[in-house]
Length: 387
Ligand code: MRU
Image 1 (cartoon, protein in one colour):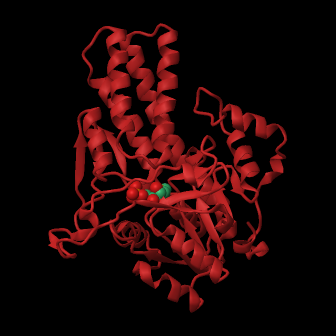
Image 2 (image 1 turned 90 degrees about the vertical axis):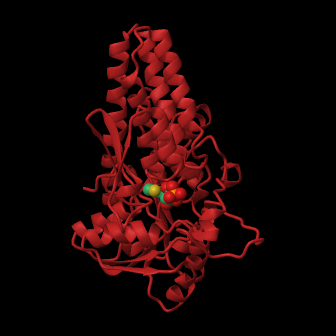
Image 3 (image 1 turned 120 degrees about the vertical axis):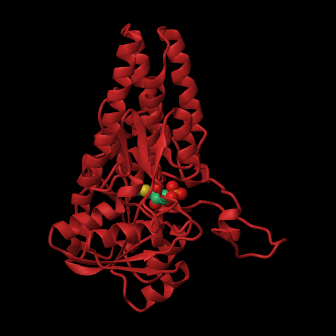
């Protein structure tokens, strides 16, 4: 499996995703501040991977603490949580992971743990978040196999692969699981301007795995679909609102609209940690705007004339009506998403392990038939018009 992020000699080590595919170099983080910087500058990116990194950043900061007082340790813990929470606003997995760490820390404080015990507790929780994310990707990949053709072409946008998660990938997890199940799948990877996650990262991962991969520029998607060369679209997500609206990399909305126009089913693959039931719809999801330089320059080469204004939103919202299904580790959620997403969150673990329960969802679940989250067979097809 790809080495997205790992512990090494007491440091958090990440493959530098800014340098791929031309150079495989690693960034070593020695503090929570280092991890926050790595997230902000996109050394590590992708919603689930950002959540894993934040959890490890908190654990790292506690590991290096020399204090013997639990009150001082708590101060350092909450300060690091704040620092990490300020890195990127859209990926909800970041806040989910930090909240989960806070819940566990508060419980351990209440239990009267010593500083050494607190450090061990937080360390173990970070490892659990990482391990669970990989397991969730594998599970959602298995659920996704049924929507993949036995032989066909899947289009994906950005990178929702091993690099964007604890490992294995969400959208690419579905591709990998389909290939492991013996399906003959070829992938079209959108280049994904301006950071080029598709051209650089998705293509790198898939080529390494020996999966048939073709890179296209973002503007080619319409023509590709019109010529009948895409059987299904699978993308990841940074945050999924309670009604099924999906925030994902800028350009995803365009792909979804084109998929609808050409009767291509459009699926989203994401772990339950990406679902945000506290945000009713996509209009409440904060969209990160990034440095104009990502648009004006390619490395040191300036592409745009001085004086041209730049708009650089990192994400867009795809309305739920364009989404055929949301593939999670517990099954595929279908429209009506308000019900199916609530149900899938309710099957998630307890409060201690980061359950997604909150008052709004708990109420809704009372009248939500569990069947709202269901598997379906590929032969049902034509889901793009279903929502
Ligand atoms: O800006 P990025 O590279 O962090 O954006 C990543 C995406 O948009 C991914 O599609 C999303 O996080 C899902 S990753 C499994």
